[in-house]
Each structure stands twice: as C-alpha cells, then as structure tokens.
Length: 389
Image (cartoon, rainbow, N blue to C red; front, side, top):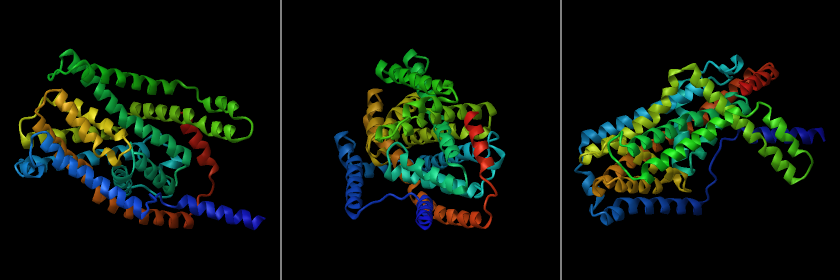
C-alpha cells in the first residue's frame, strides 16, 4: 500500500511538472488551419471588395513604408510594456514576502521575456480572452518555485491592473466624446453606453476589495457535507476570496507607486498608436479619440470563441469606425494592417520563447533538486500574510 501511495505521489508530481500543451489532433489542426485561412481570405479579399476597396494586398503596397515601420516599432514597445508590468507584479514588487522575492528559479529579464512572449503566442493562437496565456504564465511561475495560491493571487492582480487601464480609458473617452469635450462626436450607444458599462465594471471590481479576509471560511460552511454538490461548492467558495485578495494586492501595488506599473499603460497605449500609425500610412486619420474608442470597442471581439479574436476584433473595429463616420475604405486598410502587425508579429518569437521556456524550466527543476528548500512552512505562512494584505 505504501508503495502504491508513493507511486501515485510520483505520478502526481510528474503530472504537475508537465508543461501545459494544447492537445490537438490532426483533424483539429486541419480544421484550425482551414478556419484561419478562411478568415484571413475573407478579411483581405472579400471584405475589401464589399467595402469598395478592391484587393487589399494591392492597396497595402501603396501605404507609406515609414509609417508601417513605425507601427512595428510601436508594437515592440507595447510588448516591452507587457514584460515590464509582469516584472512589477511578479518579480520586483516590494510587497512580495522576502522568501518569495527570489524563488528557487530566479526570474530575470530573459525569463520574463520567455514567459510573457510564450503566453502572448498562446493567447493569439489557441485561446479566448487570454485564457491560454494565463494558464501558461501561471504554470511557469509555479515551476519557478512560487507557491500556487500566491501565483493565483498575483495573476488576478496582474489582470486587474491591465484591464483597469482598459476600463478607465473607455470611461474617460466615452464621457469626453459624449459630452463634446473630445472631438469626434458619436452616438449615445458609442459613447455613453461603453462609459456606463466601464463604470459599473470598475465599481464591481473595486467592491471586491471590501470583502472580509475570512470570506472563504464563512462561505465554507455551505460546503459542509459530502457528495458532488458539496465538492463543487467547496471549490467555488475559493473564488470570491481569491478575487478579493487579488484586487487588494493590485490596490497595494498602485499605492507603492512602482513605475513598472506604467507597463499596463504602455501595453494599451502603444498598441493603439499602431492603429493610429496605420491610418497615417494610408490617408488622413480621424481624431485620435475616435481611434481610441473604436479600438477598445473592437477589442471586445477577443471575448468571442475565436483564436485571438481573429475576425471578431477586425469586424468590431471596422464597424465602430463606420458608425463614427470614418471613411470605410480607409478604416478597412488601417484595421487590417494594424491586425497584421499586432496579431502575427508576436507569433514566431512567441513560439521560439515557448521552447526556450521549456529548457529554462528544466534548468530550474535541476537547480531545485540540487538545492531543495529547507522548509515550506515559512513560505506558506508568508503567503497567507500576502493574501491578507
């Protein structure tokens, strides 16, 4: 029996160390390839003809090469902002318990690049709303030696910081356009409605910080008993506690005024500027505030069950620009050029980073086996303290 338990433990450990992979059969791979080719063909050949643009690839040749090159540089700066934010939240933050500031697998700039770029590639190709990137990032952090619950808490804080910029931008731009403070105009549905939704979302997320620290223990009483329902409830009650802890952590990071948190602004800001640059490459751009709002409205396409929002984001942005009265031909060229840069640029470097990360994790595993931690009790106590912060 002891041997059986030991074997099970070793199998569990081996399973835990496996790198997240997307299980794809040959049939699924073919279907995925056909889908991508179909969407790309529609976007670059059919949609432009419907809009009266003609063959997009022909018109892309007429674009200003300097503006297109500038857009590529801006996208690289956007990725750099993402890496900086990652390090601010997971690596260099002052609120990290001392034992966990330098985990057994030290995360330097090279490792930070590998984790973030591999996560971005996973998000672009295989998942909806960033789920693939989140799973890969969490796995890498766990393999670096961080405690699982602390990783989950920090992941929530990371997403809160990232999307607080999104919601705040929609709120400010929506009110500015709707009241006439910003140029560009727009209907109530395009200005005030997104602003109201953003305000409600920010209020709900902020209210999570008010949940008591022992909310999980209080809700745990509902999970007493046995059976499938009790097991499901026991797992569900951890969600409010984790969300509240992550929001409080994000607020604490903001109070620390770590300049690395500006990486969230850089991630969104430089990416928006890529779209702005593409308008310059093919004509005269609309007011930046219109580009700003249409960009964020289009980004809601990432919520669709499509790889990286492919098709949904483009359609959302082009539709928003058309609703703002932007020339449809120009909008199609600018949006498709922007997506050609933002969607495909990180794919190849991200795939390379994925395989680099596998070697990095193998090295961490060897280092941890050679220098095992003397005790995990202190780390658990410090983790609990971080979650209560």
